Amino acid sequence: MALAKDNWVDKRVLRNARKKKAKLVFDRFEEQQPQCTFGMAPRGDVCCKNCYQGPCRIIPGKQEKGICGAGADTIVARNLVRHTAAGAAQHTDHAREAVLLLHDIAKGKVKGYKIKDEAKLRAFAKKLGKKSSGPIRKVAEAVALEALEDFRRQEGMFQKSEGEYLNWLRITALPERIKTWKKLGILPINADMETSHALHQTAMGVDADPVNLLMETLRLGLVDGYAGLHLATDMQDIIFGTPKLTQSMSNLGVIKPDYVNIAVHGHMPIMSEKVVEWAGKLKAQAKKVGAKGVNLVGVCCTGNEILMRHGIPLAGHEMQSEMVIATGAVEAMVVDVQCIYPSVQDVASCFHTKIITTMDYARIPGAIHIPLKLENADKAAKEIIMTGIRNFRNRQRKSVCIPNKKTEAWAGFSAEMILAALSKVDKKDPLKPLIDNIVNGNILGIAAVVGCRNPKLRGERFGEKLIETLIKNNVLVVVTGCMAHTAAQNGLMNPNGAKMAGKGLRAVLTAIGKANGLPGPIPPVLHMGSCVDNSRIETVLNAVASKLNVPIHKLPVAASAPEYQQEKAVSIGVWALTLGIATHINPIPPVTGSQLVTKVLTEDLEKITGGKVLVATTPEAAAKAMIGHIKKKRKGLGLK
Ligand code: NFS
Ligand code: SF4
Image (cartoon, rainbow, N blue to C red; front, side, top):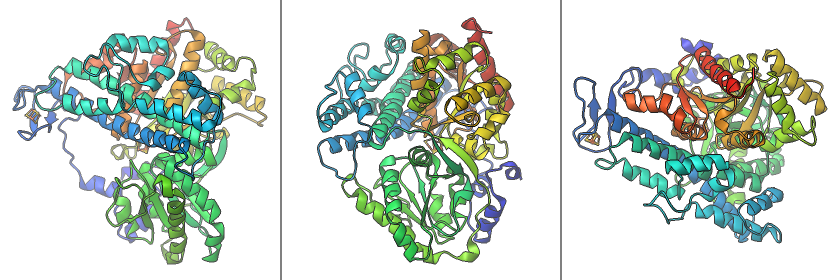
């Protein structure tokens, strides 16, 4: 079975699950075969379910139009708009919650949360043209209100060439980009309005023009990037602190036999930060039930968040979430929103694990629900930890199977951390060492490898092979999301991984390491955080682009979501395209049924935003396409 090749699939844990009759993602994947191929590459067929005259299927040469008359181009473009809107809605909802928290802190309505990075908050007030000095709560209120404007501004909605646009885009994106987007008429006005408008625009009998629909897709990419990713990251840094370098461990082996193990899964630091706090406070309670303490472990993106800010180890990416439970040693898995397989409850019911949901709009039948609201967050977090502690006694020793697998992982490379590390090389001009080494070819370019793992690609080691090939070719790689777990588990996020880097890249990593007082190199793959933290990548690129006075699309950079599966990955990818970044996505997105949409994404877009989709279905081909693009950009800048 292809699974055997996946080093993140622990065979003993798999057997443990089988013994308990727990079905895992792979089993359900097999049951689902053969999956419907409508809308999927390489077939050119298309499917629409946007109204109840359908579903309609478009089969080239046979049935060219749906019942309403919509053809393949319209349907494919409409589907893309809807996926992008859904992804953006997840990120903007996430950001909104953080903004509302900042507002509540400012108004003194919540006692359990504080502002950790005051300097960052004041810097944002300044960027927004607000008073940045004086009492911190006043500054926080002004910043939160400006952020909330991005969810309620109405002016200009139906005359999109004029009017205001997202504050967070205005203060974040480079002027050159804003000018380009303004010319295209795609500057978003209000995050909520745009995502809801997209549903209207794509309904039966509204927009039939595929090009117009693709423009709407780009607008939603901007919604995702600024009112989602950047806004969420910025609010979270202000409230919970900006990440700094931290060293921890990754993979299932971080679960400890003698401890109360609590896995934190989902996306929102609003929940996970409180859980971290209370896990520390309730150590003594854990001892009372015979455990050595409470061991928190992180799953998927929330794992990345608490790793970066607290050094909590990473137990696994999203596809390993069931395996975390199947170790038989996890007392509780607490979840909030996004990327949580409902199956975690099915697997948990085969073991002693309690699944705890915390958000009223994200519940799982059979799970315990402990609503974590801003005003009761401490009480809820305490109850969550106590639920785990009380459950320790129910652990069945016979059912415990913790693999011996764990790998050291360094994390916390926020833009600020990267600049701080570089400033040890050149205090006056921290970006200079990075740029000089790109110019002299020690660093060929920079690649972001981000996003999910996909069960369709089991056994292919796509993400890890791609990253390995890139660093071998002296491409500096940054990672976020589940790809960060992948890099960590494969030893690429610690200094030893530098052995796999090409000579030039290794020399730079070593020089930076030495300047920072380390005995050797820094890791060849820099962990920049969760999926919303893709924003941090733009922050670094903007700094480099500004310094060189060239637009991002002229820089030797590329991105890949090599195993994407979530709508959020689509909206992030679209945002990267608006920035002018050549972006590889795999599996091939369901656009091949429209020659027009495929051509726009893979060719024409380059002339519009500078970005384009790279198609490659093997890690080798993906690396080749990305490196080829990077070399082309080097040539454009007159570099060898
Ligand atoms: Ni990103 Fe994080 Fe993982 Fe994919 Fe899901 S956890 S927000 S969407 S699956 S990388
Ligand atoms: Fe069919 Fe048109 Fe309805 Fe889509 S919107 S399901 S193509 S009738």
